[in-house]
Image (cartoon, rainbow, N blue to C red; front, side):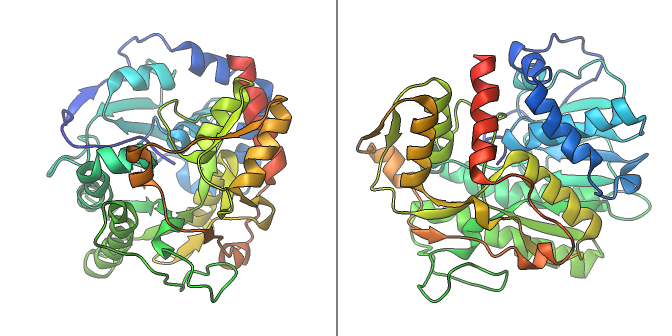
Length: 380
């Protein structure tokens, strides 16, 4: 869902918007693809409270990740086509990656700061009116090899950005914390889908617990800052998100399926594939977060999901293989992968609360995956 954030990166080195970097091929190709532009325009045309962002500076941590990249693209396209004065402050650990992923350096309304928010005390230097905290370690290999960074980005990084939001002179910046389906833990077998009050089982005394437990702690931190510091905090809970902005380093099953499908190679399944999860196309995830900010209740959590995107891993792999004209093959995961895998076998979200505010996903799993594969194949 976001940029990988770990410990040890340099914090606080600012990169001005006029740095003159040349955008990478992937970024320019993505932003010239008609399907991708349709996705951006779908978000741009939606009733997402855009007026409230006019004149605002929007800080986005994890701006080079799967979700962050699409959010930056959507805000910049609205600015450039509709003449709005929204300003994007992209935050990330690596200026080089940002220059490749985000072809806006030198453009009005865009700035970038190289900062690792998971380092204690680090924060952006430029003020913001709205903050999206998307930076997180979000895939199995990273959970296993960067366990400290996984927890730090979700707790220390979040606290740093909450403090940063509180430093705004007039009043605290509005804050969006991208939480996760993983806060629910394992389904106890008593519900079909998780509503926002559900609490499943997590064995906290494991390496893999670092991600869901730190996301739970992050939500509690948001509630603490709302109560004590008067912040307006919004908590969309994201399902497993996929789309053409996926990073090559992403080891989530759906991301690996997408990579194989785009290359027209056999899709590798590393389990029996009976796990059934909620998924969402990245355009719908970003639209959902913006909708929660505009129409949601501060302090509440909202599941972003659509029943059309609930599918088993086995069926998802088979669908992608059919699209690629290839096969599904089984492979045993290595020890590092296995250590990072979720143990949840049935994790589907109930979207009733967010749908009551007027939000609906636009794409089902088949259409969203078809768009993803078509865009990525064209960019190869």
